[in-house]
Image (cartoon, rainbow over all chains, first blue to last red; front, top):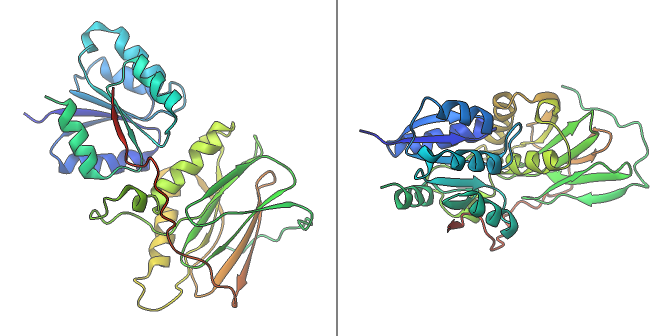
Length: 121
Length: 183
């Protein structure tokens, strides 16, 4: 069965770009437009991986990662941050919140695929 | 759509050039962003409530799929638009209040693959997908343009310039694009 990835980004264009790239790799995709939307969709979906942006309205990527990690049932789900941000301070914040990895945009589909393969088993 | 005439004197304003691949965001009253465009596009975004404006300047519409170099990917509109929007949100602008002006997208030489037309199509579609209102545009044609944008006022002036050649090339600066860090 195809593995499922939840993508979280407030930009419809970025969600489309991710849908195209991940769809080609054969993954099933669930989309959310911010942290709140993602938390709601996680209550009735079981994705194998979460890919999230950082800068989003209502609940940003940091808030989302913290909330997800508070729930024991999501302890083992890998979380990749995909963002234009590059600062070490923000990376550390994501690491402490419980992120699995950090990818700086713009991404090439090949690099994204390699990062996903590394965290999905 | 007709270009907007700027009714203020910007001669005493602090001028900031926005080069290809760059973006600038400000809410300062006496600042003007300036750029020269050929087939490139400059998007000027404005939040009229927060009075914050920003301009970018990008070379290409969308990656072909065979382009995997992160620095090269930075030339594309989808990246340039996200970086500009994020910088504006970080300063206090709201995504749903943004208004846009689009400039550039000229066909500078024949046989150049209609880059200008593709750029203009991309920019319009992007704004539609993101539900950002397009207030004004001056795109297409065969001449270069000089655009001046006052970020705090949301006002722009676009002049067609016959004798000015825009610099359209990629400055390759090694940086962190495409970096992957595992924790």
